Image (cartoon, rainbow, N blue to C red):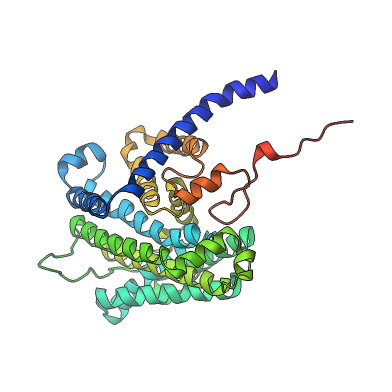
Length: 376
């Protein structure tokens, strides 16, 4: 009776999952067979859509309860930029980082402290924030990247909390009171950066495009192939001559650099920052965006970050129930698409197999292959 019930309940779920997988595979196959000019045409159309996205006509539907231009900059643009950086660590190298918000905070505090205390302007501080965040990634990774799985996750979570608590207890950078006024970026091409969110949206859009190009170039390089080998089987990669520790450290440093970039751009708009702006839940949210969209696949993580940032605001009219609805939608999507909305071809194939690897490099057991103990 129980078996028949489970089969009956599972069949609609299985059919829905197969339908979504088939649609995703068809789109991915068409894209793989597309010519170069067709791909560039799609890129141009997507960029044009991003440029006209702040239009009030689009905003009236997409965000009836919130200013659409402000929402496009933060959280949508900020989340997408953070997800691109975290995807390098989680999606490419297979390392679980639960303290990614620390690098976001380091970038934000770099601009706030140097701008307020020492009069640094935005653009030099942007470079310094990226460098300091990258160095912090090396400092975190050097003693900890020999750990794996849950142990690495716990250490990175602790690092994120250490950064937040240090900011809270350090009066030189404002302590619990925070820092204000964080300097705006100077005018660029005749555009002034004040409180208007539109110039900041185009600034973060430009940073997202640069981060996408940089990440894709890395993915297709020798470095990207080394990360893939480490994610699939670190021991086998080490035996084949891949210096795994060096490449994992590089992944942490580059991911941290993108996080620092997002922090500097974000803090230049908000004017005031405090330790409460950098809670652990932000790291968990960006990680959820990467996994929801499809770890390791650039279109997937962009879609995942967009949905994670946009859906709660779109359904703000549901008041306190909107988070419940949002959580239910995430659970349903994870049941239907455990590999993500738009997974990479490799990730989709791995999840279809019984003993696949997770995006964080841990084994995912196939429930159907588990041994059944027969009582004597």
